[in-house]
Length: 169
Image 1 (cartoon, one colour):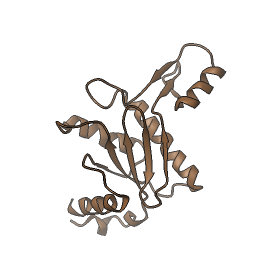
Image 2 (cartoon, helix red, strand yellow):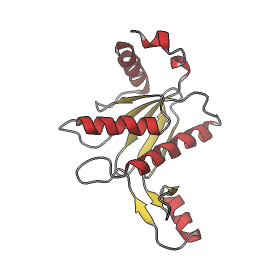
Image 3 (tube, one colour):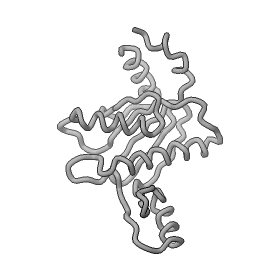
């Protein structure tokens, strides 16, 4: 079945690349080339609600709200690339809002998000890791999610890749 016949919004959907490692998370608009980045650290308050994302926001939050806070890097874990799923979603949502703010736009339709972990994946991804990345993208507003672990590609090559993969499904 050809998904382009059933999903008329495909051409209108923004196409984003979300790449991350322990030190940096980036969301790039593949059509315009605009990108936003943040150090992927979050602060969690008493109610388990995310209070700040990024070093500067955390320092500002702590200075205004002294007390006990938990600082989390959602992508820093010794065995896998996800340490805290909810904090990872918060980082992606923060970047999603920031890229629209930087472009002076509002989201009309939810985007297509390509998730690309930048860690060494010599053994490949397990089914659980693939599912976690897929769920991360959908929790971060994605209408459609792709996982990409291959070599670096230009924005045009990535757009062609997801169109081909989407067409083959």
